[in-house]
Length: 160
Image (cartoon, rainbow, N blue to C red; front, side, top):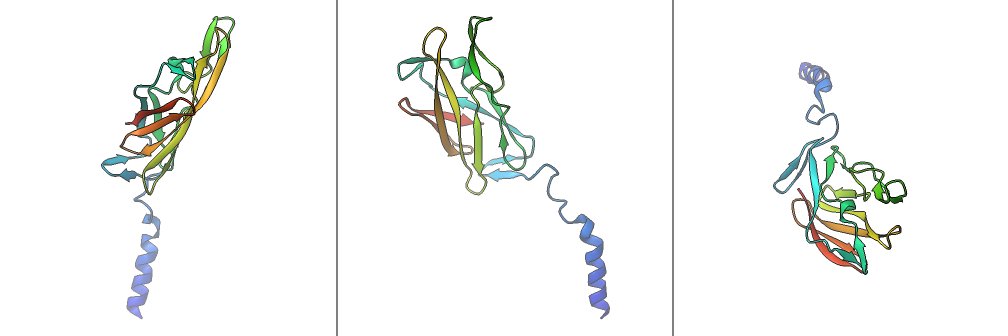
């Protein structure tokens, strides 16, 4: 009987310490050689993206090149999505958010490390008109990603 009481007393004393291995914001993500702690960030980069899609000039300043993605401990979080439009005042195309003008979205399967997402590719249809295409990407964290634009082909990207 004394052993049972001692075990119960010990368990009661340890209850406040259960769960201390997890960080407050979420958990550590470890896939392959890559380990991410909450608030760590990765940068999305495109490689060899074309100058034209479906015959329209790509407005490369609005691509997700260099957009920082933060690991919250539960998911990836991109900066608030911007919108691109023609500004009569500036007589040019402008974005409402320079941190993420293309609306980059990203998700991950934590078990496999598979990353997927999308963003807008803005093209100049004329001097004042825009045409946008949705680019989708997929691949594995720590490896090469493949970006595809319907009617525009496939291109490499990375998340490092």
